[in-house]
Image (cartoon, rainbow, N blue to C red; front, side, top):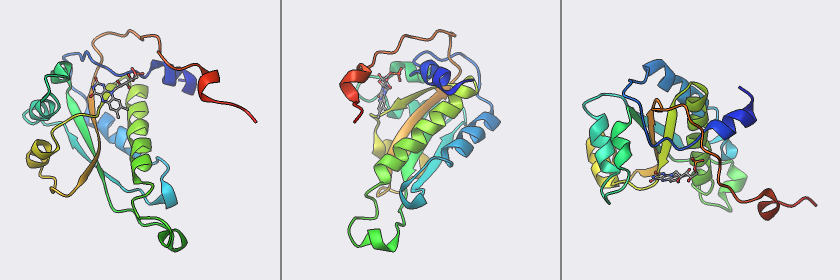
Length: 176
Ligand SMILES: Cc1cc2nc3c(=O)[nH]c(=O)nc-3n(C[C@H](O)[C@H](O)[C@H](O)COP(=O)(O)O)c2cc1C
């Protein structure tokens, strides 16, 4: 698939089919995510991929605490992206904190994961709101670990692409 086509096709999936996600496809998403760029190539990320059908619904519940994200109950897997310590070049370490680039790096990994999923016919939805404490307890993630994102994964129930609602190009970019 052409990359622009992939960009138009990827969308937040909020209606998942009753179909399991193949383990190999999840591995491929991870393989792609680890190729994402990062500041000083520090790769300050790690992933906990939840595919055990007994644990998946419990992860879903962690992101539904405000009465939102009800549709997430249909997801068949989740990827929790965690922030790890970044080792920057010695010259940079003198002027910026080691985690200065980490949030952006994690965003790049999350999005790369989502595009890899889309390219394999999977749907994803990035979730920003979840109970970190509950999730930590459930997945045995140390309390001091920073979360970089949660991705719900499954096959989309329908093969329907919504039109994108985005700011016009002229509003967000200029050439000089
Ligand atoms: C950091 C972040 C947090 C998000 N959190 C949620 C969420 O909690 N629930 C949800 O349904 N969508 C969530 N989304 C999805 C956005 O609403 C969605 O990406 C945006 O509306 C654009 O739509 P599209 O992904 O279908 O192109 C989140 C996206 C990002 C990047």
